[in-house]
Image (tube, rainbow, N blue to C red; front, side, top):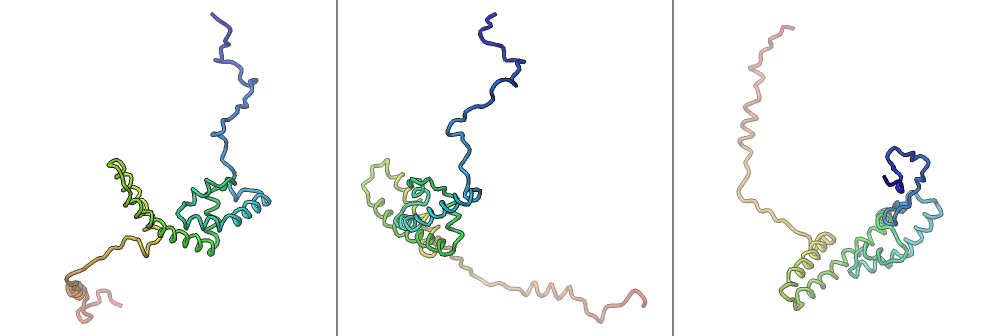
Length: 182
């Protein structure tokens, strides 16, 4: 039997090193803003303030928040940044207005996509692009592009039957007799 490879079954593993290096993709996620030290938090919030108006402008010109933050070199966490926007009513209003303006940008894109010279294979892709933009437009600007539902009612509703049934259940006080003596 070849003993160049020691048998690990039943071996004493307590004396073997247990420190394994994790691959980069398996490293723990970065700390969230809420768990950061105060000086780090202040730096991050300053970064948010610094890029906020640029983010608003880029959203109004058709980009998504995730795309903007992904392209930024500062490695800004999407969830923390979005929470920071939602915490302040003025920032949230500016963000919502930028999303509404993006719907107008998307309307122009829809026209360009529809007017493009597509091959037969590209038609389904173009339809998907248009449908996606229409859905986003309806979600971000409900007043102008949201789906509306009209309900028409014909005929009438009569409560006379329900009223008659209720009256039949009412007992006249004259016909009531007390069964227990006082």
